[in-house]
Length: 259
Image (cartoon, rainbow, N blue to C red; front, side, top):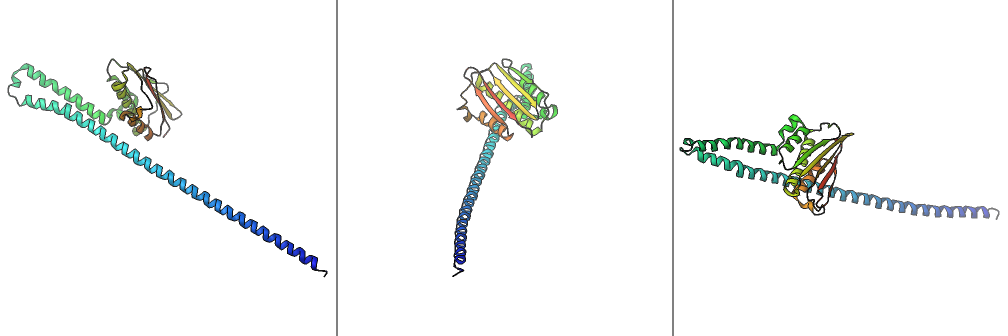
């Protein structure tokens, strides 16, 4: 009878141990379930994110193809309606034996040649700004602006010395400004355009502004010109924002990060 209390104490300790084991088992089970749920949620979110990225890339590629097809269509129209018609006129004149007997006819024929050269150069430049590699972005932009109508006052302003970027980046930047100018000429009814370039700490800040009639930025995204600009900006990983007030012009502000 002397050993009964000790046996009772041992039994109590074993009971407590069993309870602790059960509690630990429950805690570990809940922890494992929570961890599995967490892993499944992460995998599901990653899968959704991956699908969204794939869908975005597909949309981006489709839009890029659409832009290329639109540009090809525009060039085909120029070739057919401008150069093609001029060549047809020249062919008619040149196959007319009486054409060279008239001084006026000769003047008409000879006048077509420089116009054909200018039209060919314009189409070539629209395909790829060749002078960009030769003279750089700033001079290419100056050349573009010099070809605008005298009724549209344009200014190119650089607040810091511009550092040359890779040609791929500069071509996209050139096209963005070109598209902006095209939209201004077609739709804005503006008399002045300003282009600001600020090069600092590797990033390039650009502000394009006009004093035209403005537009509704909420509905303008459906326009082809706006979509082209947005696609080119996204290809440069640029952050951008449109600002416009009716009868007070519009502005496009974007920042191109360091490559």
